[in-house]
Image: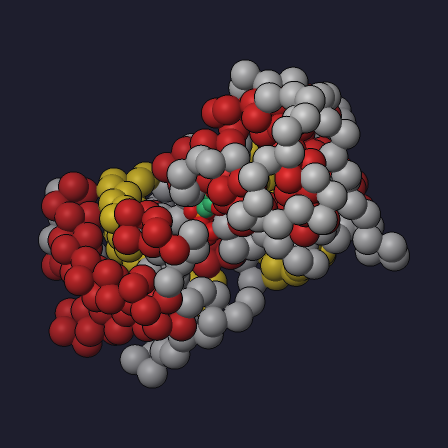
Length: 341
Ligand code: KG4
Ligand code: ZN
């Protein structure tokens, strides 16, 4: 089954073609992404109106590129998959409308895909042996949560952040450290030169909710560490900063990773699964990858997607769509967008 997957949920216009087979591994034939980082850079966040307009401008071109890279045409496809939730409403509408128009003119079956569920199963492209049940840690700029994935249609949220997403926290700390967006990879790069034990940043716990996370206190702790207690974001750094920005970056990164690893391992133990899967942009983080593997108990295998399948992409939408289509599920041409999880 040859599936085209489309994602326009946030600030990346993405399309990918995946060949799925009942017996063998899925093959990613193309995975094209047009990022909008430059368009939003001046605003320190994604501006929904700008995102929707940029998707409108690019979506058909990115689809065309994905088909060309895969060496296929619309006539070769068996199905279309598109993200319909969650995300920015106007941004989602662009991808969904493009997919519905293609379905209308080609007659191809259409399936709406949940973006988070696609992140949760993205690693299956690289690890075809990965079977249900497993626990997934989805950790991105918009979401940070744990899921019990018991079957393609049995995915339950076990816990997650009660405030900021981990990637969002990386992005905000990058601003404090004067680094460009998206901040995660920048903070992580700087952290390589620092001491993760230099600053004892807090690791928040939520009373009575052992699988939940909170990052807003950590973000404020970094702010106050740099500016002094009660310091504002636009204030100059305090004069007596006892360590380097690299030390701050490394200590912050370690605090985020410690929290994520702790909750992910707890969730895997609670569910009694033998596989833990990570997905989302922050799954690219080198310390998270290292520590999860180091701290996983015997009998628990940790699986990460390849880097191209961590961040938002169309191939993971095709992969998840293919899984649902194989169960006989379809969406109608009245498929609507849902901004929330
Ligand atoms: O999944 P994604 O591409 O988009 C969302 O659905 O949010 O994730 C983007 C997020 C950004 O916050 C980015 O800073 C973060 O993932 N990120 C990282 C790394 N690479 C990307 N955070 C930490 N370390 C990284 N290496
Ligand atoms: Zn995402």
